[in-house]
Image (cartoon, rainbow, N blue to C red; front, side, top):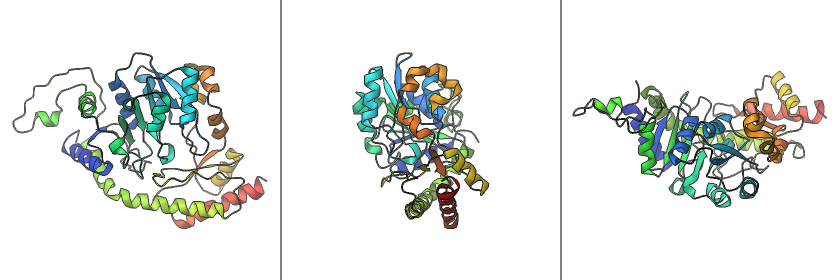
Length: 355
């Protein structure tokens, strides 16, 4: 029931799917990011670049690893950092020690270009690919992937198993350290200790964490992984339907559609709309659920004092986008008719009710 043969099989199957030689499962993507950062063994308080438009767990991972988050602004068309915003952050705050880059919504970021702009060796790039796998996110670019690509298997993700995460890497030393660190720093897990010919003896080389995935979760993950290609095809179909509907409804001046990319994982369909809160409420009255991904971290109460006013002032595009950002329904089981209804209702709200 705990970490055992199903986890090992899930890791092997993920490795084949992603094209990465090593995959290590952990309890969450947040822990994947934190452990990957800790493995870098940076100086305490070392500056680590991160976008503010991300889930707060990514920034929490930087803090829990003992480092200092430095915010990077975004490109309004991709909602992710680009080389120019990274270079601006470096001019403002100095050269960083590492970066946590994010494939927000499933948009496949050019992480190598960001590393170059930051003046970082590629092995100092930790990628938050919680909105993958799918498309190119964590997959086809894996042969030249950064040091660590961190995945999420949370209930709403592209590969959902309820809870869980993983680190995909080409670095065998990192993979070995993660396997030990996720289980208290032990040199052998319980399953391997009690295999035929095994021994109860183990060592703890370094104080570790309780961050392992269970066989129960891994068994679900193995079944879900078989469905992932079909789910990704369906996501792409729904995105194309949204694009056609919104482009053909005369809303081009009011709605900013997500930027297309052939390797997009399409975890989210994020649009920019005026009077976002009223639009969201109007859709809710029609029983259409929406969300916002995300509230910028610098606006969250628990991070304001930590980041301070200088960091908050350094991300003006993030602030400009944040109040217009809206995620429309997108999941493989969504019917075509539901997409059409969302488009129709959104068009009505923007052209009449909110005019």
